[in-house]
Length: 155
Image (cartoon, rainbow, N blue to C red):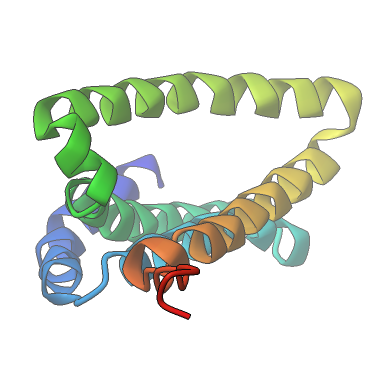
């Protein structure tokens, strides 16, 4: 079952990457990937055993294909990236990604210690879903900038 993750990346990665590349907005593949990632944890609430693990690994593989191919492009399109410089912005992005990759297992382990493993998996999935929705909501401003406020002189 663990080999399935690599197979999904190899088979579906190029096609999903092209979808993300051709997507007008990079937010959509990122949010779809995050929702699939959260579903990979929530699947254990509905299915048990090897089928649950298999479905979770499939969903995580597809999620990775969507998110990883769109994240860097999304970061590079931000106004703050242009102001800060692409190299520095990508450095900050990569560093924050590494911190997140470290904190995820620590948070998950903390949940398992505080609650049983079944509820921890569900809570982690719900947290992942909430962060996907927060990203969708908070990043909307970057794609649809707010109009400039009307100055007193213009009135």
